[in-house]
Image 1 (cartoon, rainbow, N blue to C red):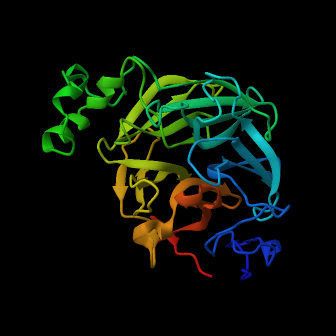
Image 2 (cartoon, rainbow, N blue to C red; image 1 turned 90 degrees about the horizontal axis):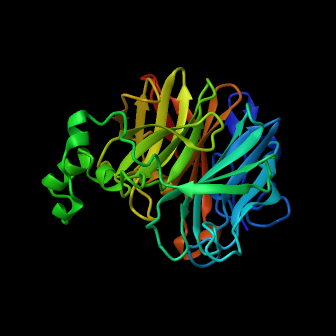
Image 3 (cartoon, helix red, strand yellow; image 1 turned 90 degrees about the vertical axis):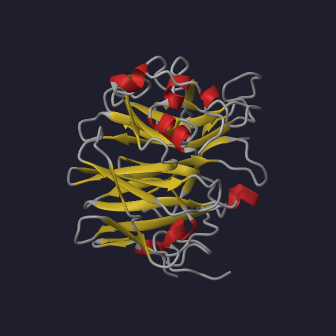
Length: 369
């Protein structure tokens, strides 16, 4: 198998120890295909994110089966000191064998993210959860906690977001609008689009809570944490504040770009500006990534051209965003998945440095072999 040089160079940060250690994979400058851990097994941590804690990196991701789409194992955890050599730490959160459990084997657990709460000393995992046998109808967010970064994590609860509460950036007129989904059976008409912008699906789901699918977490400089997720039938992004223990929603949330059809959010902050990279909604097929920015987590958010440049940028080099990792020295690493739906276990990983151009916009250049 062809050998690749594994190198991630961000100014003074050089992961030279990666050189030649893996076959068919990279960190940073080469498209990963079959990345293996230090035991020689494929890294199975898709749709995930990385927690930096006490000098180590902990990578949490979906354990995906060789065939099929449902979750048979749970959320995997790997650890590393250099972002190249990963040790398998085991299953951080296992599916349940108990019939009727919210995380029963055969459910769907996606996009796991873990943050540390300094006030409680707990590690808190959030993930997108679909109940067994219901396809993608449940659209829930699940929560689990642990006393250690590697787990095992104890499942607490799942549910939709902020039942009975309107987003704070919905106008009074939108809140009082009489919108019935039965009147809008045909999607993508001008009338339907206007209704979506006014909160058609917010009204539909108000009592039970807002849908939550592709998601990420973000902890701000002041310790406040936020759940960012695709909602309203994947038509609208929402940002919801978490309680101080990071285990529930506080009740404060906003809608972003209603009808924009954005998913796979990855958020980061640089020099006081919040940035978010998302994808469009095209199933497992790659598409052109979207870029948004705001002076506050609460907005106003505006859209920019895609940050990806070079051949294949219109398809995000074959990948889809999952996380942006902040590294020492104000350096940033974009993380994405190279989905392989015929065998999700062997989906690859796309890790690329983020730079900034003269206009202050993020730039992510294509991988080089």
